[in-house]
Image 1 (cartoon, rainbow, N blue to C red):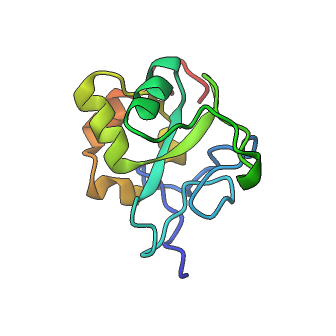
Image 2 (image 1 turned 45 degrees about the vertical axis):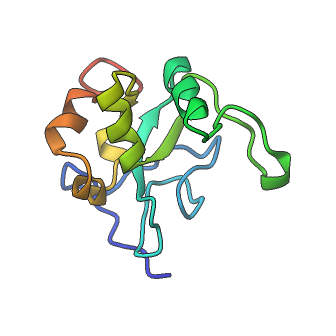
Length: 129
């Protein structure tokens, strides 16, 4: 798999999203992507209880540990590389988490408009960034 250039939505070098838990399509801690990443795991989001419940309701349980996949389960405050389309869906449903712009891959812009990402920026709201 050929990884795309690691550029964030701000035009700079893509910053890590989370090493604990280790996230990303490549499980390298960053929201790197490639042609084979059909879900576009490119949006670095800060988990909330509301978003985790929403994701579970839609059939993607991110909060339950799955030791067989070395997945600890996510809790509010954890950062995770979300599929761009799931983030867009969460925005439309009013339960989108904050995003870390410097850690969000520019490929997310194929699905999510920059303004929408910026409106949910943790950096802007005094979050973890």
